[in-house]
Length: 77
Image 1 (tube, rainbow, N blue to C red):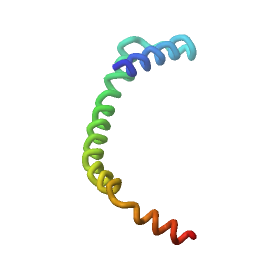
Image 2 (image 1 turned 120 degrees about the horizontal axis):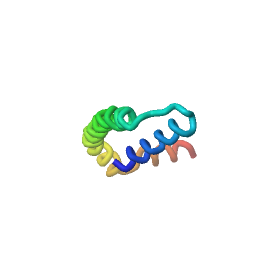
Image 3 (image 1 turned 60 degrees about the horizontal axis):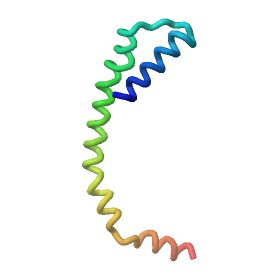
Image 4 (image 1 turned 30 degrees about the vertical axis):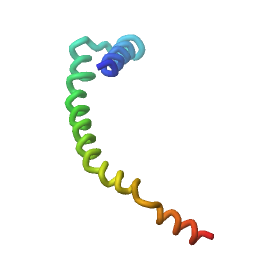
């Protein structure tokens, strides 16, 4: 919520005082909050699902002995 609030304040100042394109409070809330939040929530859920599926594979990879790296180093010598 704090990130959205900072972004809305920034956008309001830039539009109204820097580029002289006035924007009201309702369009500001609509474009900078209401239309952005559903997409951010969907991306968060998607990221959580992907992380849950990838985590076991990564943990298995990290617990394996590092034979591939050792073989590669021996081949390079």
